[in-house]
Length: 351
Image 1 (cartoon, one colour):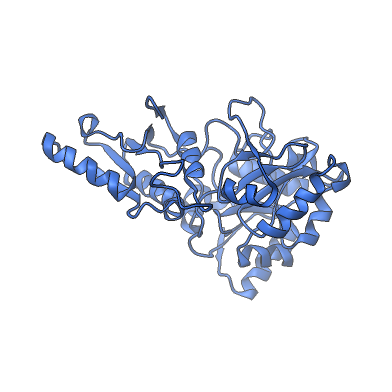
Image 2: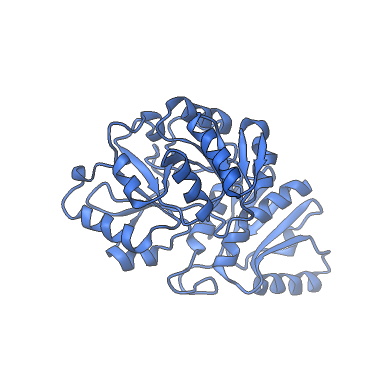
């Protein structure tokens, strides 16, 4: 494993590695991806091997420009009206943290799509990711660069710690700005459906194409990445509580508390002081209650707590529906709560 910079010379090295069927971890605006040539089945198999990822869980293919969509997708297979929705989404929301599920071309390897008739495609906003894809093959499958089911990496050092020599090169582009994975939107049927909440808020999607439905996570077989019920888990046991419901009465010496914002943390401290309880190890995702800041910090904080060796994390959900976590169309509370829900060991009542 070799760490590269974002210089043009190093990106050329990384691009050549991708063309040769090697694995390259690359930064995106969401999380670091484990990149492989999307048209090379052997390279794709190495991705599944490195991540220990079930082959029934599809990969997201990243493109460098809108022209790359034509290599992967057959829009003629879409139902009436859906092509216009694809055009509007691509025009208004790409590049960005949004993945589209669309009918695939036969040339796309079944290993990339888990044998489905659709392919997951994203046009990332990160300039380093786009340049690397452009220099290499034009289509790079890049699921999160972590072992399957573990915390997604938001820094190059997270990739080093979790994958090590299972990846050939890591392009260090610094910390990821968004910090949670892309929203996945299925446009392959007549009913646009969010299969996974993420970095692109539902409100922005609906402003572009109208009302969308939201996937029921109880479905048995995933049709896109991120639909499995358990995912993104730290090594420590994680208990999930409603916003504001963390109580000092349940505290223990070997735990950490994860608050969404400073307001709920201060309320907890007041209760702990009254009860005479000692302060636990505490982290706050966003002191000011910004869902954008909280999303960017989420995986960083969980990685940190894992490194500290705590045995239990008690975390609270981000408030949704116009409360503290809302900031109009940019509210990412649903994405934060989705990741916490999948990382949980126990979910307390009323969550």
